[in-house]
Structures are given as structure tokens and as C-alpha cells.
Length: 408
Image 1: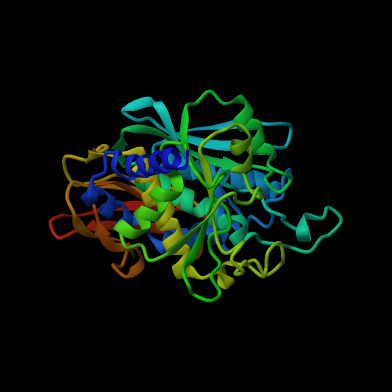
Image 2: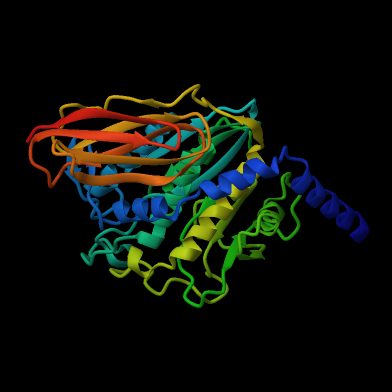
């Protein structure tokens, strides 16, 4: 019997790691596309450090506690970001105050679904989620960090065709014992072959790079064998972490309802069992400034790369534009914020700048290397007077300018 189990385990690992349609060059390209600046921006917005425009109004998300205004603002912000990536977005009404958010990316074979998820609620202004406490808990690590990684995954992978369908999932009311994810898993109609759930992936006080993978059983009879895929992805692409598998693992996140229902799921988390857990958990000091940004970048990269490997990246991109193009900003005229869209047909260095009517530089919005694709950047005129401004897109082979108007 022991020999039979060993053979099954061996074959499971070999199948998991090698059977997906992996394209090393494309996976490396995906990894190089992960931007720590994006991850920090998302956490900063979701934890209230930075205001954001939602429905043409400047908002600050002070609390994501279920049912509160900040929770609904976070839901809307996540939906808006996903829509900007060109994905189909929908919400699931769990009850009168709880809503899950999903974005769907069709695959070549839609009979198999790959999921990556995180909960977007937090303890908000209730320290330790005590309804009688009014101490503010920003929830940067718990769990704006996981949400940021899933958003960055959607931003990048939405540019590719994949073999399998991907669903980017954002759970509400995790802090009340998995209300959102529990409702989903007992009502879903998908053939889910894998779920990577991200919860608190930004704390590494001793800089050892240890990340925990929590699985249901010590021997996996699922295909793919998720812990092995994640460990091999870290190794094969030199992501630089130290994955440690705990099986059986913790029940303390949204992967747990999937275990109840015999769905192949793991939790990716910082040092919960290994003794390096966030000391500011559910407290007013759970802030972006207290996270290990390099570790956060690497854990996010590992989750994104593993999702890409399991989904099976196909050897071409979605909507590679035929030529360079700069569109008129929208809205125009605008009061506080507008969006500039542009297209790049080849790998190129891109700068996007804004000038006043005298030709003086007002802002540099983009200055970085781009792979081919369609892009958008937001410009905030909060500190500028009314008037006409010029925005430009310049690459090594292309330059174009357009006018836009600020009205206050």
C-alpha cells in the first residue's frame, strides 16, 4: 500500500509540474511585468493612505468593515479596476450587506476554471473586529495585500490567451467566518481545478523570504498538485522565496469552505505557523509603511506566476495593436481626473507627459519599458488651475501630442 501511495504521489507531482502548456519566455515576461509600484498603490488606496476617484468623486477608504461605506467603496474600486483591464465583471449578492466581486477571463477550454482570490473586507474601525471597539485598523496586510496581488494578476494576465478559464475572485465578509466565500462555494457551477487564496502576504520581519502554503492533506490526489506547482514555479523562475508546505494547514481564511466541498485549494500566507506573523494584525498599525515591500512583491509575483502556469499561457497576446495610437482623453473637459489611452505595437520605451500651454512640464505620468499592448493612465488635475494642457506619448519610434481642458 505504501508503494502504491508513493507511486501516485510521484505521478501526481510529475503531471502537475510538467503537464501544463508552459511557455518559459511568456512566463518570464509575465513575471517581469509585475510592478511593486502598482501593488503599493492598490494597498495605499484600499487602506486609506491615498484618496481615489470613484464615480467622479474623490473618496478615501477609511474602513472596509462589512456593511460600511468604505467596504462598498472598496467593492466599487475593485470593480472599476477590473473593468479597465477589459474583463467581464459581476458581483454576487450574498445578503443585504455582503457582495463578492468577480472578473472572468475566458480560456480556450472553458470547461476548466482556475481561480485566484483574496478577501477585501477588514476589521475597519473595530480593533480585533470587535463591534464595540472604534479603534481604526487600516487592513493593509489584512488583506489589502492579497487584493492588490489579485488585481495585479488580472492586469497582467488579461493581456494573454490561456488554455483554461480564469476567475479573479474577491470575497466579502471573511472576517465574519468566510460568509462570502462560503456562499459562493455551495452555489457555484464551475469545474474549479485550482484555487490560490491570498491572505496577508506582506509581512517578513526577519527577511528570510519564508512563505507558507497551506494545503488540506499531506498527500494530494488532486491534479494539479498545487503546493508542488507553487514550489516548482518559485524554483524554476528564481522568484527568491522559501515556500514551506503545511498539510493539514490552517482553516483561517477563504480557502477553507473550498476544502469543505472537496475543491483543490491552497492558502498562500506569511509566517502564520512559522513564527513570523504580522505583529500589527487587526490593529491601527496595519499600514503599508510597516510591510516588507520586497517580500510583498515576491509573494505577489509567485502567486501570479503560479496562476499563469496552471492556466496555461498560449503563445500570443490578446489585442496586440497594429500600430502606435494616442486617443483623446476622457472625459474632456474634466474637473479632477481623466484617462489617457494609448497603444504600443512592439516592445518599446514609453513616456507620457503633461505640459501647460507655455510648454512647461507639469507631470510625467509614465516613464518605463512597455511590452506591446493597449494601455491607460489616469491624470489628476487636483492642484492645477483651469486651462488648456498638452499631453504627449513618446517612444523611440513615435511621438504624438493632444490637447485637453481642465475646468474648475
